[in-house]
Image (tube, rainbow, N blue to C red; front, top):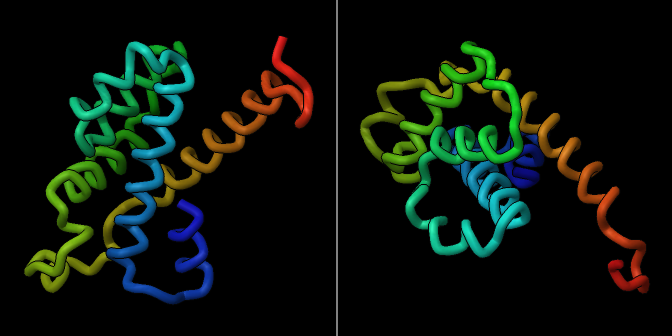
Length: 136
């Protein structure tokens, strides 16, 4: 996701590439959280999620006992997940000719994702021993 943010901040890169990198980062982040929670249970199941961001978000909400996401954020997630799963963000197609990438809703989802990343970093820091110390 950092690559997407960097490209976006600098105004560089094709916006479809930025969106693809963002979705790819979200997928990896969510799969990483599932593995951290229960690697034995989730390692064999990771492929079953494929690149479906909706399934991953639903699973993360379930295992971490989180509230459902707001409908406006869910709508953005659904739209991006469909585009990401079908590789419309990754490969050149008529889609990118017909649809201006700046019209693809994402702002709320990106803000929620950044908040989730910060929360995860804080939680991981609480359970991670300082370097050099052995976990208890």
